[in-house]
Length: 347
Image (cartoon, rainbow, N blue to C red; front, side, top):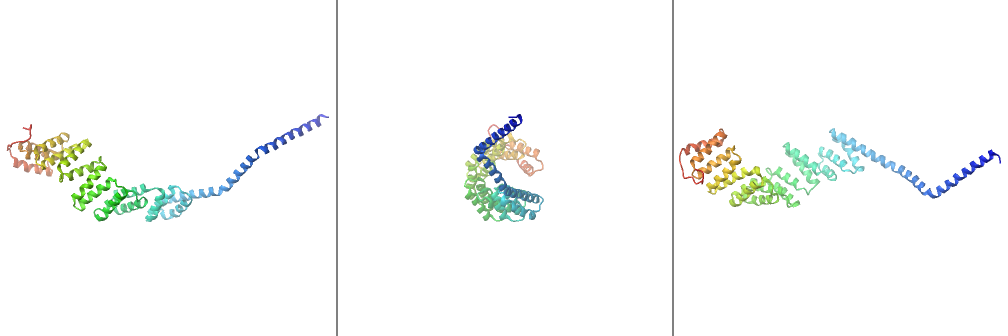
């Protein structure tokens, strides 16, 4: 055999080996190769939906751009297209913004409900209230109620907006707030204020004040109003509330001591009133109102000299105030008389 024929036979042998190896590979790996071909086919099938999703995103972006530019009518069809294929909350949120701007409040509420955007409607309503645009604030809170009827705060805000013009409707909103949340302290406080101011019924107001305080014992406003209202009904309980205030908030102690002194003065306990008012002045010596209260307590305790000194402090601190005018009148009547001072340790 010649060298040339040997090389040719060797090439065919090698080629045959490669062919045999290829057949073996196809036999063992064929299913995987067909799966790869199937994946490629699947990609080609899903290309159309992916393109549609891209168009949907483009519609949302175009609608949002028009929305931000204030072109609400032009934005609306794009955003309607967006929500048909993009189910994210942001598409519904932007659609609701456009609808609300166009006065479509019910449709906006439905879109914002899908976007879970109660907080946005509440913010719009709050901002309108800050601008004192009461009609827009009412519209915003009404939309918020439609988005989430279980939010007691929205009912309370609607009641506050109507408290002056329609007290009965305000009462219904407050009661609706309690229907969805029986432990909602602001609703009790709002009902108390309604009974006190619009219906002129302190007796009906007091239980609501007490309930608000029970549910929110750290709320300073609730406690102050409750203590003041209780003063005319149950002075002993009022003193308990004022002491609670003094213990609760250090910055409120001067007010608590002032009110406790006034309460004791109304109860005929002038010497005790002096003690509380002195405690208030230890914390706020620059407060003319406290000095005036102390002067009145000294007068009631039969201490004209001490009362005179206190009235003079009022004149020094607020010489042009109504309190100063009262102090001048009292000083003219007190003269230099000496009484039987009942305050131990003050003479």
